Image 1 (cartoon, one colour):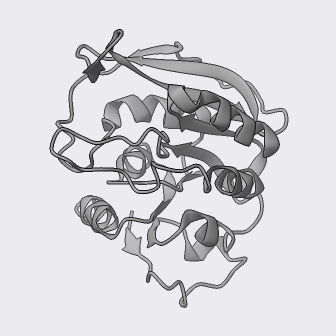
Image 2: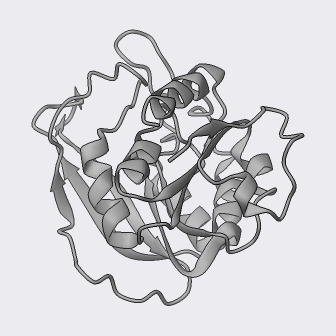
Length: 231
């Protein structure tokens, strides 16, 4: 599978032609980039957007647009537009802003059909509780067919990534079961907040094609290098 990196200005793309985006990572605002994707051209969206919690890692790194929710509704409106009827979207979210995420999903016509908890063996932080999990909603557009096999709604987080590639890096191992359950080989997986490319790597290893979009230039370059080494 060949991996390419599109030009940031997108001048070399033709709206309405999905082939221009297949196995491509694009540097840019995901709302603008998704508007260039054809309607109903994506089989699965799997993404880890900013949690809207002003996150700051121990080393001081932050996440772009994690301090506001202006992007939330328009981004998921485009997610819904490009997702095929009967397709799934899986979105991590920040529990402190759950109301904002749920409102945005519902406004976009995405229906909550499942909730997934990722159980860690360590605490990300500690305040009133020891926070030892991440969470995501399984969202559906329309009435999808039930998957051939099911996975549990509690998944063990196998290892700490060290957040070497991204301040909120997700291990590929927790994403592959999601890709393999809610899509088929050859499908196109979209991650509009692709960060260091974990979702794209999971798609690649599972025999799927991918489209990645990343606003931060440093993370965009990391994802390009990471996927380029998998050719």
